[in-house]
Image (tube, rainbow over all chains, first blue to last red; front, side, top):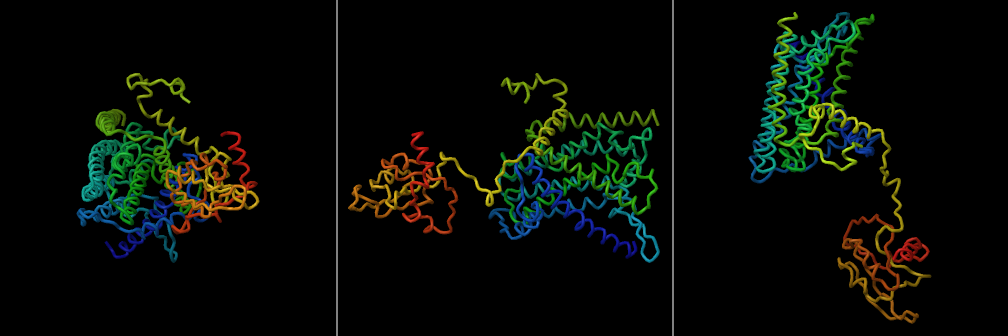
Length: 353
Length: 169
């Protein structure tokens, strides 16, 4: 790897973290969720700081930083502070393989540089994401255990059981996509979704793999610990679950990683099932390559934002699953459905292509 | 509203139809009812700018009624006796007026008051009544003890509450 490539990768990392993820977490995540939940519950929501409450996140972040950081007396202090770090670093590093757009042609000194809008074009991108998202269990379980609090421990145990049982159907439903597109590279999966059926319907995987899409979508809800699967947190039963004993910025890190996990889920769903950065019908107009590239970037973020809003509306309209219902759904419905999906996909590939 | 909710029926899990057991259509129904709420009017008061004006039945902080600068109170001490939170302190003294006695000292500790309205109920002279004031924030304990200077309100000012008491008690 040449040094120029390393510099390019570093610049991309900085842009993705500070230009995309943090604004997304503060505005698309916290602010939009607060506003949307308020409107769904016939309230108004934050509207005091700045116009329409738009500066509320800027007031929240200093608050989180200045709060006292309490570590319980009998907690395992090392693991207690390691927990949020694991969660956060894993949540950030999963974004390394997400293709936010196609190549961006930038002209510097008359030379066109084609910059790929993806930090690392790993050829096993799908596996990388599966591996890291399974590691995210450690952050939650370790912090639940090390707090020396029964509620935290219960939250951590629940989370590990839930994430492991839903990871199975998540992985199996991804196999359907991999079988159809013949690759594990996320960018190639997006490129393969480029065409059209009957010249009208975009060839997105959601139309090719409807059963796999549903199982993956539900498994993603469980993976990100959001309602209706937020059993690790479950305020009415477990106080706040695994982060009961966290305060200040350590709690802030958990909140950040929770929202990042949701964005991860949304961008995975976009990439695998909704054609990633493919903006349908755009190649039928005669547009400059820079404009096409930018509108593909826009298409990615539009799909992404719509899925995030969907996640939020689901959160505010659905009750929480009971633990046995969660396990029944995971093992008796989702797992057979995703296996059936693989069988059907294999059958179609064998006889119709 | 759903029919079974109107009839107050219980639907068992085994009685669900296949499309209800599939979760997904029902989830979309639930989401649609959540989305509909977004466009409904909101009833929030923008508090410091727009203030809630309570009806005359509201039990705000207790006040003493005065007529032309003379308080109605005869310092019988019933309010102090009945107060479940022991918030009221009365010290009586004699006066040349017809009522013969008046409160030399009348203090209500507003951090103790629970706004039950027993003092108002027990008062034979309609001298202590509940007002419609609810903004009670203090920065010190001393500030929260209201003496006669803060408690006295004229009859004209308290007319809505007095009318309400005449009509409904």
